[in-house]
Image (cartoon, one colour):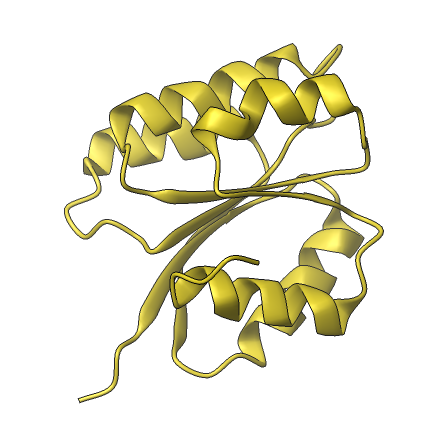
Length: 134
């Protein structure tokens, strides 16, 4: 029996969202459980569902269109991590701010800027799902 990896994806940029989803679909044995474009919708959905079947990876944009700065995204990731400490979290961001990376480091598995190459992104996702360092 094959292992199907379950992913949650949160991003508000429709173009980036589609590109990332296309890359995810190219990876064998992936099931995208939830897709969302706002943190509020996703967080409420996750809490309501209580994640009976914990996903293998949560991919989240750091800053969404209604955010004034990265604080909301940082707090959201920390909350998800405290509620689901075994959940692997990959944060995507257009920002490469070292302070943000350091603040998130104990709470996430991977921080990736959105300037990544699709091929490298795919390799990183596969490595994370297999429990390897990406």
